[in-house]
Image (cartoon, rainbow, N blue to C red):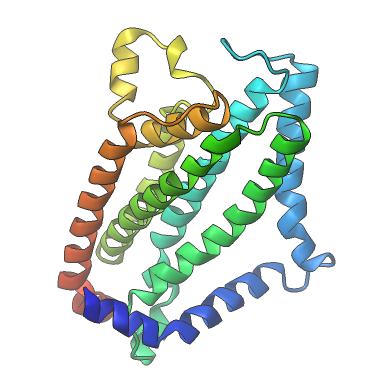
Length: 263
């Protein structure tokens, strides 16, 4: 473990170069360039706010704020967006970087780290704009806001671990990426992002609780919408993510050489 961390540290400039190249390639040849980093998430927040709070007059049970449902929706979608971006990019990262992996000798762990940093940069922009909206609209949750950061760390650990596992499977079974993309659509609607889990029938509610993303989304909504400290569920989420990370690390170590041959 320590040896792997040391190798990644030695190649830190390589990771920085990967992140910079990915960021620049995304907005290359566009007229507004990196301005889209702000415009895209800003438009997303504005649309959800105007449509659900002003046009549809949607209200969240137990929440008095006019923007209650919009904040509920945005907080869930933003967290899901981070999870979705990390896992979706990790699933094809070995195939996308096949030439680099075969020609350059570097720790393969640098690839999921680069993917994660890129996703976190995008998340940082949209979450900063969302936080500004909470402050301006008078819906900032206060000191409990600090509880978001350890929850985010656990979510990133869970997302990277799952992404690495799917990415390894995808090298040997190329249909895995397509299956995962379809599964991700079902997974989104089986997670209480658009609707509160309290409106579900008891049998379905019990089934939804098995979904680990339900825990992440409910905890972030507890913090931001209800302005309360998260419950004990984060302990289960942390233990589950750590277990998944251990499994992903073992799988990666055993298959690293075969991945290069298969590419």
